[in-house]
Length: 89
Length: 387
Image (cartoon, rainbow over all chains, first blue to last red; front, top):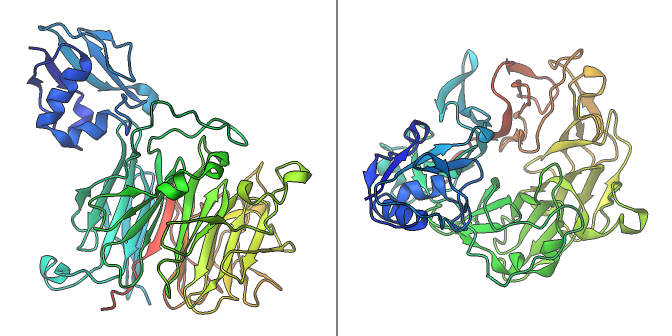
């Protein structure tokens, strides 16, 4: 199963421990993670479910393409890193 | 008089208290986090005194605006000692077939919360009701102290709402919500840039009521278009709710008929430009402004910080400077950063350069509390909780 890891910067607002979850696409992986940690959802996704403007996600070290619908595929052994973009300050 | 004051700043919420020795910082919350707004709701809460060890502090709300993580809301019932995360307003799913109209200027507003820009308690007998104005132009209401929020659809779905545009921001925003103390279904809001809108049925129907406001920044034939006006802040006299004042992008306006029509006040030295305005709680003829050189500069005229005050409904103004810096000062005062307490005697304002001044004599003289706070976005007195 994919491993989801979060930037340290988010931890002082909401605890986001690394966790392996089910899912074949980024949307499925995040949905599975947020099902167990609903408070974290709004820190990563906006009102319409898109990735927040100043957040970034990497799958196996590669930046994602689809920030709106989160359709990027996630291999079963991939690591998904959720970090803050420097554009946000 | 109010002896507690809350500041929303670029680096947290600062709570100050007045002791015999003067004003001092009592508490800092959310240190280092960007706080766009703080609001104290003085209405008593059922069970609150029990939860906060005997004293009902009312309810304090803070809107954080994280650069990366979005807008987050928090609530305190012990005067800011402890906070509870509550829901942030959320825009509903945008319909797949929705095609926005092109606004008068700029790009169409999206359906994503960008900023909490207004927080106002509901009526005296509406426990738990809070109104929330936002960028990009949605008005939200909570009926449970912020546990959940609902977008006001009649306003959001009004085609004229899509003509609003941003003033100093990418999106339009609701910065003022005035709830008539005598009739909580009568609500007036101010929008940059969308003028003043009025509901008399609690938000079921709305009318644009900015007749008489004038926009210098538009072509002459559009200057009096009510829906493109840029009121920087709209305030209501609690004792006479039909009396309102607006600090507008290019002037000062007053209304005596509940925001239906406005008259412009042009002769004010040193400037009619500014963001902040406060009105006396009982005397609608008395209002305070913090002027700046007009829009393309936005600095105090001549490097001198002054407050302008009228006590006769705008017939004349006095520039108040005692205790304020009178040379090489470049403090700009944002729209929510001036407040008056429930007596009308105590005022406070804070600036973009982290200065905070307090007056205890209606603005005649000012005390410098600090000149090195973070940039100040909002200044709010904690008003007494009256059961």
